[in-house]
Image 1: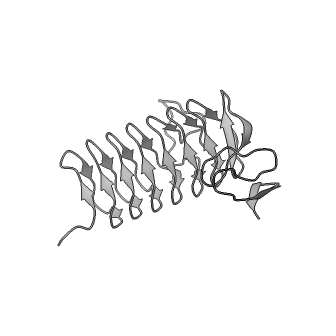
Image 2: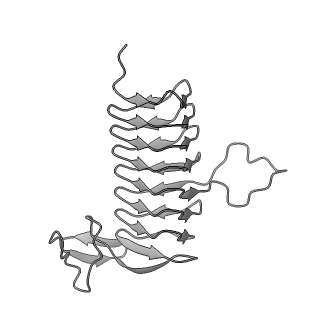
Length: 187
């Protein structure tokens, strides 16, 4: 049967994995059992997708990223090189968690910068932009621009990625937003 996705010969894909049409899995990757990868995704070199992970359509995961069980990536998420996910709040080598992991959700269109860390149990909102090296220790609002250790909100970003001025009208694409409790909403 002809595959409608690409897996480099140096990569491993376990049994019972779903891979969507047009997805590309590059060098030295491992996709573990029961993982679901959507259509038109790209996994760069040395990406690990753990058991039971769900990844939406159009997701781009750059080199050296491990997406651990308990993490879900919605459609069009970007994971920069070497970004880090965790899945246990209080890890101890000598105490098993028995497969119980904190849930982490990265919502539609969010971008995680290179070497950013997403501490488990949090949600990163739609179209949020996490700066390189930032450490997320709390939920992130839709369209929030986060930077620092620990990360704090330093502004807002448009769906196209442009930083928004105070009037919340994008100078690049013209989209307009208003602030809500959960973040920005396009108007």
